[in-house]
Image (cartoon, rainbow, N blue to C red; front, side):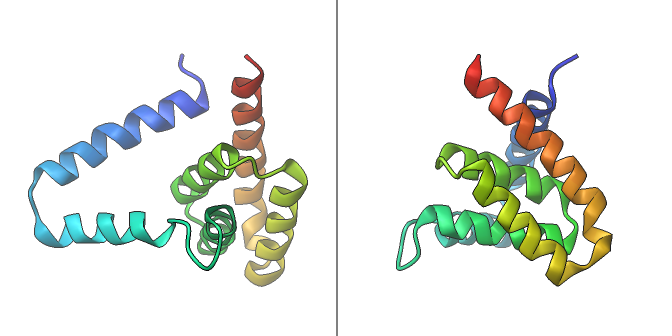
Length: 117
């Protein structure tokens, strides 16, 4: 069985390809807007990804949490920084975020294992 990171990445790529292949103008624009939002600007890309991570936890979107964790990992966000993001998200979102935080910690650990390999 593939690990969590490979499984998520494969599924996400496959489904994004199908969505974009529909040639739906609105969906293409939403994807483009999403990409542009997280580019370096007045706020650094790492800060934007941490904001995305916090809001995704509050909204309880595990796929979004995984995506932003990957981006944070790519941008060398530290484990201490990630746990501070978790703290903010859990204060804002309440204890309903705890199960999503558990899964986020598990995914972060998998990302760190891949980095070591």
